[in-house]
Length: 449
Image (tube, rainbow, N blue to C red; front, side, top):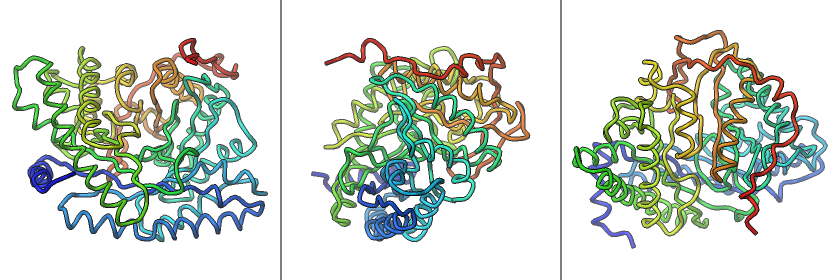
């Protein structure tokens, strides 16, 4: 049970340390919206989203007002559209995305995820149509987010899909001046229940409808670490763990309330530390508080590994259902400390890649020169997918070719997406390898049965 004392304990964290519930996300199954006629299917999708999520925003606002807990975003995730649209006669899946966009705007949510395909072992006809539709979808909708899973530890990496996604990112950047790429994630080991965009989708193993909540709170952890300056790292880890417990209890409260009021099962609390561009709400600042002069310095990966582990240990004791990604995010454009380090040349893509071995997700919201080739983008995706496959963890790439810009320039997205300096990429070409296609086989340790 969550008592009044615990609620009162959060007041300081909310008022002074940027604690918030980053999102309430309603997952909705669209499996009963399949139809041979695309227009009929789109109508069913629109009607179902509006029916189930009609009170989501109002309920979130009521909970926020009553408990004094900021809830930044209300979102929806749906069954991967490649599975739903494949039964139809549509040659392009843009109409399905527009139905999602229209429904999301009708119910008032910030984003809707699930224009997705799972192609880790190969393509179906519907997968190909969806992937080919992504650039136009992200150029013609406002709140639709897209994701593609190109690998798993069990299946290996679909290098045909990796090759194709490099081209899709380039086309999306050209059509949207880069901004659309912020709503496109390429995964390895994608999870079916996390509430964060742009990668959220409602997996086939999930129920008809559920509520997933994502908490945040880098600023709370940062402030807590001020009390243990000079202490050994095991004391630092224990402090992070205790703080993560308190943060997650807030998410548990919101999830239970939203579930009860909406009459929808409670799915999971994702206890990831999700930064924002606001000063004092930065994962990079936590790493510097641990003792680094800057994120990117030697020791960064070790400090991040400790942070990620302590967050999981503290959070898992605070909620009956922890899931999603649950760790620490390192999106460059969405973290003031990461932005500063990248601008100063103290943080490289290669160092970020090393950091992704020990934290949630991967290379996130990174801006690169606008003339970066599709093959180079595919090579970056392949490297990150390999880290996920071998380490049996979720990794992802959300990379933005900044059309017309080069190293030393910056790109500004506004809002939670923030701004990012254009980071240099290795100019050695992986084109011959990428052109091979095929599949990188699963590692030996995937054979666990």
